[in-house]
Amino acid sequence: MEYQEIISLVQDEIEQTSYKGYPSELYEPMNYMIQLGGKRLRPVTTLLATQLFSGEISRAIPAAKAIEVFHNFTLIHDDIMDKAPLRRGKQTVHEKWNDNIAILSGDTLLIEVYNHFLEGNYSNLSEILKVFNRTAIEVCEGQQLDMNFETRNDVTIEEYINMIRLKTSVLVGGAFKIGALVANANELDSNLIYEFGVNLGIAFQLQDDYLDCFGDPQKFGKQVGGDIISNKKTFMMLKALEIDSTGELRNRISEKEFDSQEKVDSVKELYKKLKVDQKAFELMNQYYAKGIQSLNQIQSLDDAKNKIIRFAEDLMKRSS
Amino acid sequence: MEYQEIISLVQDEIEQTSYKGYPSELYEPMNYMIQLGGKRLRPVTTLLATQLFSGEISRAIPAAKAIEVFHNFTLIHDDIMDKAPLRRGKQTVHEKWNDNIAILSGDTLLIEVYNHFLEGNYSNLSEILKVFNRTAIEVCEGQQLDMNFETRNDVTIEEYINMIRLKTSVLVGGAFKIGALVANANELDSNLIYEFGVNLGIAFQLQDDYLDCFGDPQKFGKQVGGDIISNKKTFMMLKALEIDSTGELRNRISEKEFDSQEKVDSVKELYKKLKVDQKAFELMNQYYAKGIQSLNQIQSLDDAKNKIIRFAEDLMKRSS
Image (cartoon, rainbow over the protein chains, first blue to last red):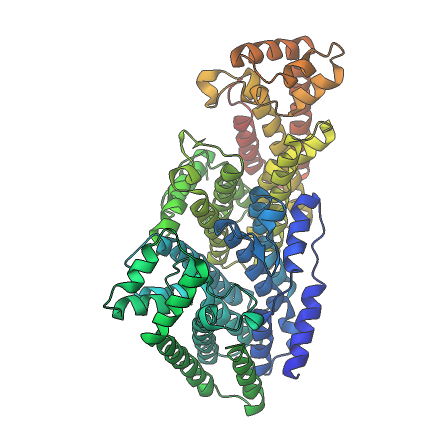
């Protein structure tokens, strides 16, 4: 199946996903969140991996749904924790309803994840669930680390990379690996596609951090400079703090009152002066290349592999 | 195995359950909650059901743990929603840490539930998980209904019974049924033990409501009269509102300021005058008898069945 067809298939399948039950206060928020849109990257990766290992794509659809539903569960609960008012330009669940409903409808979505896995009737269900559970727990660990880092002033670059690996990247790796398991890929190949996904995920998050500063506001879709305004300890921030001997950045961070646009502009200028934008780009490319190296070790048809490379390239050419 | 031995076995097993991982902000609350104690009724029921159907008790331990861990997950999240400061006389997780940590450590416990089921290496894993997922979702539905009822003034007795069935009783039924499935019981028997558990659970909750009003403060362990003070729409409250033609109870409910002890005393007196205490007792006995009827239809050794009846009798003779 062509790459664009897979995207359409996933979008159709997710669009048709609707939970029915009583009371509506529980089910409406679940359906609202699932139908809020998004690029559906994770379920696409699952289907691509199943195809890579010559599995039947339709067999992977329940697993792909499970992973997308899990991702949506994390968004509902993360938005409560981050007190985020908006998600994809619309009200978050806890804003539209309330915190309690957001907790409980999130919990119910997490249970539905496992129902989707069961719908697949997978002969290796327990193997698939072991990979999924480990991944899901790591995502929780990543979210907890992210919260811990907000109040810590001694976060290292190594810790930051580990945090984004857990919070974002292992789910990309897990989504690929589960697609491979649906196709009954062997252990070596399943681990290689997992490594590919994790490194691609880290590269993707580093790019996201880069675009948060230097992206085109028209194309990026989020407020450019948000990380700078909130003093988020990204790679660029941590690297700049490490090499800035003037103390200028440390001063900007400690300011209680400031003009947002002026802060964004001057920190961006400092980043360029210290060349941390370039360093972020280099690090991103390193992780991307490391991922491709794992992919290249997989014994598979070049055609199927090229579809995955095209997906990865698309992902990394968003808007700079 | 004797009934008391089963209780000791479950308590030992739960005591040894400890989750290890990083960061500690995620794992400490999980272990704190699991080690907070409790009667461990639900895992005991799972083991009793496995024994009833001549299964090996040790095979049921992972499933029993899963069910107890799920129960603890619901307590963490319910306590956030109810803003409860104490649980079993100790600080709740969100009080000891904070709401975000309570959300996230609860989420992680819910994922660990499925790891426990996987530890069991059950040949009928998907059948077990289908029963579990349905039960777990119903528990969430019950919690949502309970929250809805707080702000509604037209709750019927039928709706109340349905709410406690979902919030409390299906998990007792599910715990029994999963124990039966571990022993590969047939569908008819698994459904009969489920019905037994659900009806026992409803009887248990009606007794809990009764004891909340009329229990011995020394033995009950909770504040006697709490439901009356908070105007909780229990069976007795709803029944009393239905038959009280004087409007006295309606007046007491609408009071914004009142002396707690005086309110408790006079509402209890009214309950006795209207005989709703007796009606609650009768309804409780009806559900209990209905449960025993299901149990009696199961083809099994009398000895194993008697152990379950002894468990049920113990449960219903707490403190009146």
